[in-house]
Length: 250
Length: 211
Image (cartoon, rainbow over all chains, first blue to last red; front, top):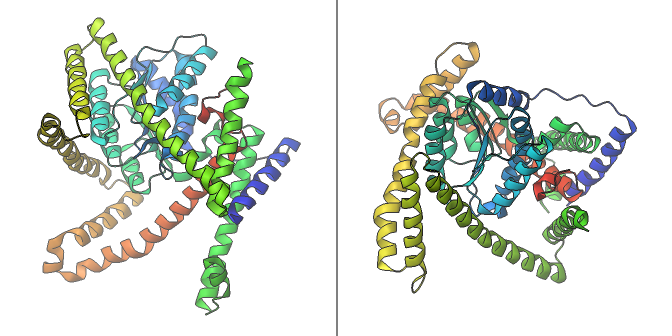
């Protein structure tokens, strides 16, 4: 609860600071910078772009996996605006039927902004079953041979299948996941990889709005506090002082 | 009114729901516990209703492909037929106990599901082959670590040369555990920030509101 309150206060404070004109420098995240390149490559090849926010047990409702998929849907808005601008067909494969309206709405808004129609069959719910979903995505790779495959969300073992399948058809691939066990597979097989919380920083990095940048600064502060606390706990633990550890345990 | 319906109401509802669930998670009050339980039940119902949307999406897409005679259109017919058979047999009597349904699941679905899972092994092997070509210092370090980790996980290593287990165990217990913990903490922070931004209306696309 304390972390949550500190986060809210820090977010409000830094959003106010950025609105007042505070300069914010952000490190480059190659995975995001490569999105226009991936869409452009698909355009040059005359092939579609594939996008998937991954698989979750129990759908978007799952507290551990749902946020990753939701972050993937935020990034979809940005990818779709590039595909709409260049007139590249995009198709989104889903394992969460409840995400279908969200994806349809996101695509509609992105394409409407460029005065274009959403490509037919752009939103494709495959299955809620993990390997049926994997098989559906892989068969779409062979049928449509996308020029770029963007995998952003939460993934299980199907991550390896998607990344290798995409590599097999020669698609440029950008992978990003909040699933610790799948990061190595994306690093091994994708051209660019977003690691963990980079996925959740997407909006701030892409739109550079004061609110988004301020919230990232707020989280940086929290991260610094946690690193400091970790070092303090390590030192106090090694010195045999249990007071602080006991307070945090309660 | 339509602007309000599209923007303010979903965002307002999201804020209220997130605030109630957060409050309930940290503060144990009977009143919010009851509301939180109801909200979570609603979420389950909404997710279950989503299955209907999924079926509509599959059928509409399938019919469209069949009408346009797209590639493999005949498989779309097969998919819809199978979907109807499984749905009908699944709903007859007590859910999932009809002999036809059980036969389909046991003799068709499960073997295919397991086969696709087993294929991950080939993907991992092919990925490793490409990744572990030692072309730089970083790749060399990765390669050496991978060799020791594989030796640690291979049952035969313990029997032949137990000493070779030590580096792999150290790698898994110390640097990998430390890095994984850091990764989990930072990802959790990202989720906290994402949730709060949604609550404060800074992540509007997540609830279908894009300006």
